[in-house]
Length: 353
Image (cartoon, rainbow, N blue to C red; front, side, top):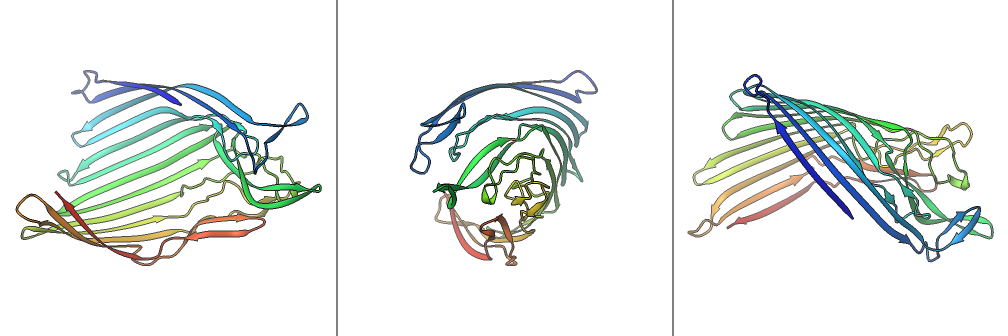
């Protein structure tokens, strides 16, 4: 269970027409996790205790308490420009993976983040530009490591198709940094243009993989860790246009989305146990460029009341772009992956009463 209490207050000092705003907040959190691992592949789990393997349920009884502060200073530089600087901390509680063979306990992870940015409006409020940058320290990062479950038959390791997962805290401190920008324009009546860009970088300390490689060889040296499920670069753009047609409204939407691919596994597949040279590298997902579109006819009256209908036709992946967004490699199975969805079309009817 988790219990949290949060509060914040803002003070506006009598400086420069009340242009400064100082906000401070504090969050207290207490997390408690209890559980037991009773069975692994039909057998009671076995763990070493004082050099002797002991079979039986493995219990987890852990709790954590945490105080996380936040301080934000904003400055109204003009009627349409606000700049700010923010510092805050946060954390994610620890626990144990239910897919672990040993129900290994892992500790909470925490982050201390600095952010600066600006929110602006200009061109008679027809344009809005928001920019921000952040930098932070990331401690005790929780990493998921997966390995094939191996049975021991007559003293020989026998591979199975089952997997097991352990969560390990990376040693030391990682680094987070990034830039984000959003732009919205309304250059003409009924027309809205928008775009965004993001650059994200996560540096995670080298960590020891708790699972052995093919043949049971355990690499005891820390190995490099990839940034997962987050592309380093991503961007999007959209156009929306509405035009009245007598008592109806025609709506047109087009959006474009790009990212440069991402890893789904933290580490390379296999290393030389002595030199730590990479034997099999982990592939990264392909770059993506997806276009979506929608055309709608709205405000179609149904009867004499306020009931209205909207008819829409749409397409996802309009250009039928194809890429392997999810790639994974293993020493036994080789490289596998999933393609994105092909071009699809659809028709929607929406009735609002």
